[in-house]
Image 1 (cartoon, helix red, strand yellow):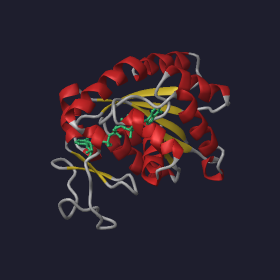
Image 2 (spheres, helix red, strand yellow):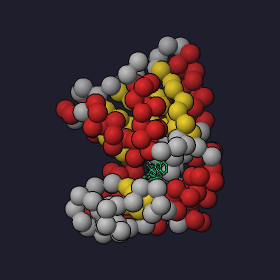
Image 3 (cartoon, helix red, strand yellow):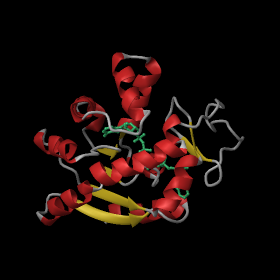
Length: 215
Ligand code: ADP
Ligand code: ADP
């Protein structure tokens, strides 16, 4: 099972990725989580990534492509993987093809922009694990604390409304063209593409994705 989740920031990719990875016993490869870990560690990569993510801009293609290439070479990816937040530009998608990575499914999650803004601005994050919650739609058992570790949840700086607006523009400009890119790949029989509504309960969305992947 080699699957990629594609969709706007806040549509629910990370939330669904967690379920799918448990279901199929595959690793979640989230470039956002990898970059945030680097930022936390204060490494050279982290300092550089922060200068982009703080503004809601994308980190340069060469940087993320080499991170993903290394990650996909690890043994746990042999039987499959889930890409969450990568590729995010046409050059990134082309880089995947160049290194010979074949995807079975591209699942496009969709939701209207007003819903996206409410989701992103209400999102709360457990930084070390990447687990996400929402102040209204997906509350932790104890307000403000991670269910597993009991550690405090934070609001990501880039989930504040002004940065969110820029991220959504960046999505439209740089990432949304991937939908056509993968439609064309699908037309050539190279991948399956499926469109799933991201609206509705988290469990409902999950069931709809599982229905498609189990075909
Ligand atoms: P992405 O990884 O696509 O940026 P997330 O999975 O982090 O998105 O979801 C963004 C926010 O929306 C999180 O706070 C999450 O709890 C919430 N969320 C995810 N799916 C749904 C849903 N189906 N309905 C309501 N809120 C959702
Ligand atoms: P979301 O799913 O909410 O959009 P992510 O956690 O995937 O957010 O990404 C956060 C930030 O990390 C992005 O705004 C960007 O700066 C950087 N980033 C993550 N993935 C990529 C990628 N594939 N290419 C370039 N930058 C990325």
